[in-house]
Length: 115
Image (cartoon, rainbow, N blue to C red; front, side, top):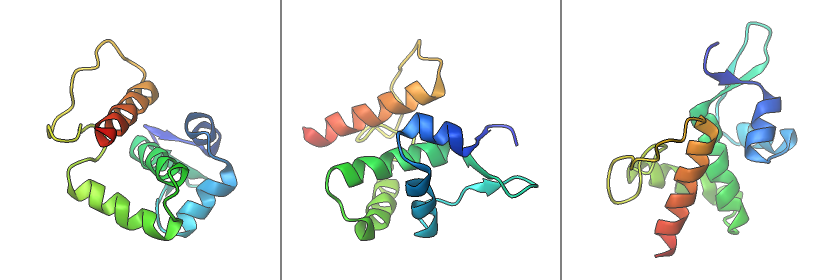
């Protein structure tokens, strides 16, 4: 599948362990696709969601509350590509690497939350 990533890439880009990622999947926090051979394949949206999960957990949010917080954030229009309060993506040109773009968006959202 085009635009999907294997577990190895997810681990590199998110800093999570394979065990953590599988646990989050078992909890219903993410739902990766599968290859014909059954290998998990993660989309860019899955990577962004995992980064958000990681950030919630690092701030002390209990895993039992993470799903509700993710859903609330998405309802508020804070899904990937949207900067809080604007409803749109601000220009981050010349960033061309999607992982770097996602990291910058997450960083910007954290800065907005602290204000």
